[in-house]
Figure 1 (cartoon, rainbow, N blue to C red):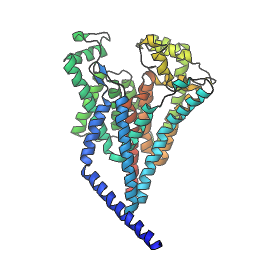
Figure 2 (tube, rainbow, N blue to C red):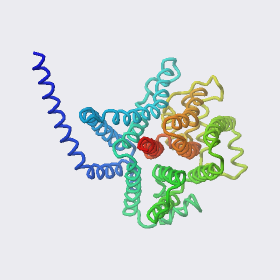
Figure 3 (cartoon, rainbow, N blue to C red):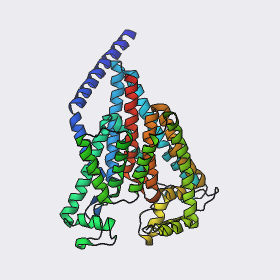
Figure 4 (cartoon, rainbow, N blue to C red):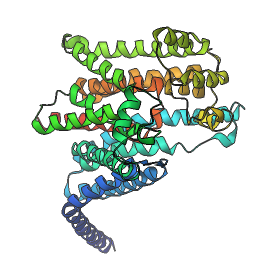
Length: 442
């Protein structure tokens, strides 16, 4: 009886191994098609504006979720194949890093989500305001799993999809609105915000997510000191042109701040570099609290008025949403994503979709203490985790991206932007994993 069971087990293992070999051969033969499908589908996912027609992120989330499912199925197949071929330890190490990074990036969103349930239980948040938070979970998971599927090349494929998205949006606007979209973008962005060149009202090149998402790639190129080939120079010039035409004012100081940090950083002795990142992160936590305090008492608006800075209506958004909060350690918050409900309901007269400051939004939604924990996790703890697991250079790139990201958070709604989320995670993750692979090989 025992011999028969062992024979059946061996036969099953042989069948499984042959099946996995066929699957692997099929995957290798279709890899170039998988890459093409990824670029095309992500181009569609990244495109939310076609002339006057604007899409939400529903299609993007569906496409991203399908890719997550496909990659997880491949990971399961890889697992069985690794056992069969004796590569178990190698696969286990690779998937261990992926699992670690998934937990690392999903943890703050999950805890904030759970905190909202606590606010419901204690009566601080209506239960009908609870959301799935899929617009954060799905892009986060895809950004990391895509690195598992394509390795470091995923950065190139994703950048191609973003550029394809820009071309698709601009071409659709050209067809429906004409060539005047270009002078309209320049005049409205840099000379007269109320300009109507050629009868146009909006800036059809101000593709928020695309323009600010590309900034992460520029930051990575600078921080990693990429060799400037002719191809890369032309690509960077194209990215800068898109940024200039898109005219997102906050992206300029964000890029400059990150680049300045990089220039100063390389003048510091190596033994102090990591400490500078940690200290800078701690200072940034304090500055964020100061920003919220100044907004809460109106001093921020007085300062901007003295400096002659046009807040483009943000003084009204910030003032009205801060009426739902108070600057006090006892303030618990109103719940995750509730600010969007308020702007579409009680504050609908402002005609905006969000707070236009993720710093203010996170404070109002999560309260004084949870807001501080969120800041500390992103500005300090993540840098520590990257350094311990993947080395100082990986931690440094992560911190450079965080500088850019948090400056965007000051005046924009980028925390839930699909492209920005993917780029801000994919770039440091892909580099960190590539560095670890090189270390293990050497």
